[in-house]
Image (cartoon, rainbow, N blue to C red; front, side, top):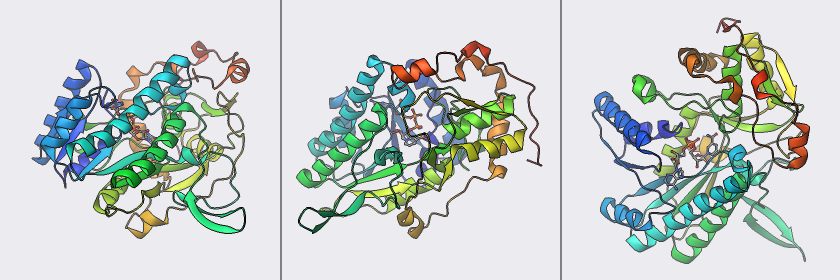
Length: 388
Ligand SMILES: NC(=O)c1ccc[n+]([C@@H]2O[C@H](COP(=O)([O-])OP(=O)(O)OC[C@H]3O[C@@H](n4cnc5c(N)ncnc54)[C@H](O)[C@@H]3O)[C@@H](O)[C@H]2O)c1
């Protein structure tokens, strides 16, 4: 399958020469070639695709950077599903090995290739943790008073809520090291939960459509709700749905990356950190919005995750707004685009994949023991109500 966020790339290649790296299977490789060809037909621009595992094929990575001499490297290449990372010790170990090695290899390769490339890394809001912090979360660094009354501005403490989030915290420490030690120029984007399927670029040709994950491991919450709503399945809200999270539409993600690429830190500057979100919302409020549009019920199920049942989240995103981002907020008008995609590909939906299949620990697994994946049946396909 192709990446949801390769949509960003379509936007970027309108402006820059781009090389895309991916590590996947042969069928993935040919799918990427189809998309590259489609983009060429639509835009007249060419994307070079290289299939390199950056966690393992270090020499190829160094050679590629030497050959391309890039100004910027947008680094998405990580196992990005928190539930997948928490399935079992195999997936935990893979997530750490892949993500941490990939980021470390990228820094080493830039140094070995002797290229002054700016790294733009996709991190996550989850590095800050999802408790209630009691105030606005600043962008990466926080003012503190140390013992003895000394004032300091330090990297925000890391509070990962899964092994996946832990890899993004480890990345953040690594960026600090390579910036200080080797003067690398690095921007870390602490991104919220992406929703939506298309950017203005991908919508130009069906072959450019992004992957749409609706399952318990890979699907992100709002896209899952939209899919469930369209398919007549009760919305799977974990616990009370009192979790507050940051959200961003895929088109804004593309815009943020463009802004980050256009505003690199200078040599010697500390790691630049942006909070990449449009707004925060409580999960139960998001569910209510989708239920209102589609007429499906909300189903509160036991929470498979070890996390606070309820939390507040107040996040600064001033840096992006000051640089021109006009955040797209959750607008039912945009739900329609996702709903149309879901309906178009509904035959591919496997309802047994909808309930959570990954549990943070034994206690959570026991609490979820009665969830039966085979109990989910697709209902009548729902026409959206309320005019959407
Ligand atoms: N989707 C979200 O809501 C979200 C939120 C915050 C952050 N992010 C981050 O954004 C980035 C992209 O996420 P996405 O949602 O498009 O996920 P995705 O899984 O669709 O894309 C990640 C891509 O990285 C590739 N990859 C993984 N390991 C690699 C390796 N060792 N070498 C080369 N390629 C490798 C995968 O093949 C995949 O195509 C990830 O780093 C993710 O952690 C995503």
